[in-house]
Length: 600
Image (cartoon, rainbow, N blue to C red):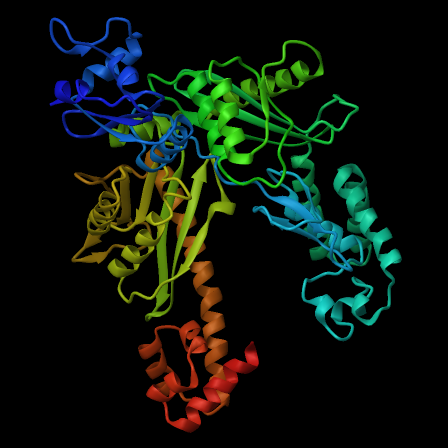
């Protein structure tokens, strides 16, 4: 079967996939000419076997191949994009997976507006007169919140549409341009000061420290603590460098450092000659991973999105052989020539050296805390070391305010920006988890699958999760954690509640002192905390709506009747008067309809 396919390969560009004897996906690659590329892995005499010219690592992989599939595409650029997309979704054994395709936030200003305000976006806003600042890997929101705390800019987008001054004017946080209390010239001076804070974070930090001191002296300690936390975040986002380009260069820097089974890629962004932000990603590398693979994956991932600002050049620490190919990809995507270079001397070499030193330090730190991942790999007999975990839990009280939560652990910490919460319609725990997991897998093409799922639940929910991921062709290790049951009930007595870990095939009862159990418990507890907090918030919101509806003469029985029919308060709010009259009498329907109309 394999030999027959190898003899009938097309002379066209495309993507190929290798499978083992168990039909497990091993590797995805792309080729300018499929026939030439794939055949180079094999020799046909005296029998079909891996080519003797292969490196030992690739020879090992090819020796496992028993089948292949391929997809023909119009050109090499399309093959590059398709290869990247399939790797992210299907997670082959021997490919690397780099999760850095999420666009970083930018601060932007629309100069076409009469009284512009600073906002945050992750998307390209297709309109002239918009200026972008960034990208920022962290601290963008704290910078903006701080600027609005210090300067009387238009605080909210809707403020300018109002006919009269609002509470912000009374609080002296806005100069009420809606009532023409400030001229465009005066407002522009304030706006220029805000932009100066973006260009120079030290000036912003100095002003914030003054504000924090003022709040402390006025015994406004909570507000002072908020400012303190912002200062810490902004300080962390600052890049310490003595380099001064003394020009308006826009440069993106990529550097890879690799050690054993771990690699890190550091990205730095220079805008208008200033080093404004940096970011890094740890990567679990496979036996056949090369630095060129990592650079290629990082560049294609990052530049596949529409970016608000683009560099004039991309600087790499290492020379790679596919720079021309990647430059063509960039030109096809942006219709702009962006050179990829590996500087040898001068300030550009100095900046890639800084990226490399950061990469080395990050690997040292990571390796010292990576033991638990090795132990998790051994415990669950995984093919690779996991580092990114998604953890699921749901919460409700007697079916009211049913919610679900996903928390994410990566790079040795919880990634709160990646947390997600859901309002769920399902009534029982099984259906709730099914609803939440199904919604998550639908986003795999946008937000890559993690290395492992952890569920708050037992064997039944683990099997459910495997059925769901198999339905979309993704392979993720899954474990559940639940309390030990006695007489069909979870044992929650003080000091006796033992957690059991469930896998696809096993039930693991680890000692309470086991570090691997404690790690899974920590993940579960954070998901539980997130779900409970969101549930409380939704419950308060629902209780408030119930109270207000009761004031309007709608009793609990009628509210229950509406919830049973529409499913949630959100759907009741969206309902038309005719739809409400299906459930209620005309008078009650009008009262409910007018009540929700008043909330808009």
